[in-house]
Image (cartoon, rainbow, N blue to C red; front, top):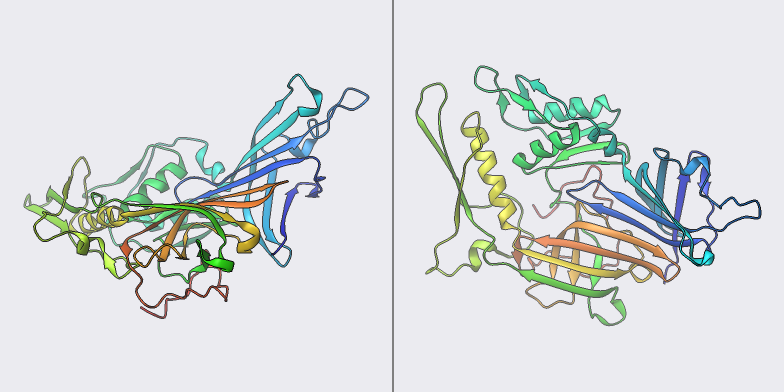
Length: 380
């Protein structure tokens, strides 16, 4: 088995933490929330009354922190951000005193001030690129179709920059996040090459210690929207009833529904669109969200897996029966380093059942990192 490794870098360089001082390090990566870390250190009172770590300048609020993790032969950045919370704890017994240091990724800088601002004649993607550039992040942005002509409507921002971009991303079916100094505003990378295989109850290949999943047949639904055209006062309507997003299995949600049962349907209200293009996008992406009717979670033995699992990409899971084995989209990973070892808790989702026949279940070859610019899937 591989030996885990992680590094903590502060303004003074790499932090050397003795194993006896490290109580735990958790790094949470999520496809909807800002990434965050929790570092818990044992602190000791010195003869002069001071405490180890507690008064050090590098552990002050808003000091930068970069965390890399993985294994001796392969490490990568987990999070780059800032310290936001300091929580020392002094229980009755001095040997149990500890210091918790919390922090968030660089997107915390975009979430400090609520703004009231108008964005006339702009596409959502252009707004995202401008905001990322303002904070010094390299924008990786997928173009959006609808342009908001100020003669019809103007986009108004009433929240922080990060909350605003999350709102724009949601209505386009995009993900918005900061990783490694890059601002991403793009579709979920379901066509990316999967990360190395997760194996459940699969003999010597087993690297998942716990796993569970849920199939929710009530989740898939058709989406319909009506709106009066603002220029000619005609009634516009749009319906999404088929998925355009790549299916991660052979049997989509629609095929699970028996012919005698009517598909679910929801109507979009309290949302205004500039026209048919934006109505189509909104309905389609709401349909895609409902199509993720399979959700899973589990805990990985990090040393047996020998890989750093990340969200915003796919992973192949085997050993859970033919119906449920296949490619999943990873939505959350918590990396936990402690004296007991290295574990990764993950959540994932899927918009289909059964394998497609193109999956690689061997897991012998690591795929390229799918979290930056992904290459096209050869099976599409």
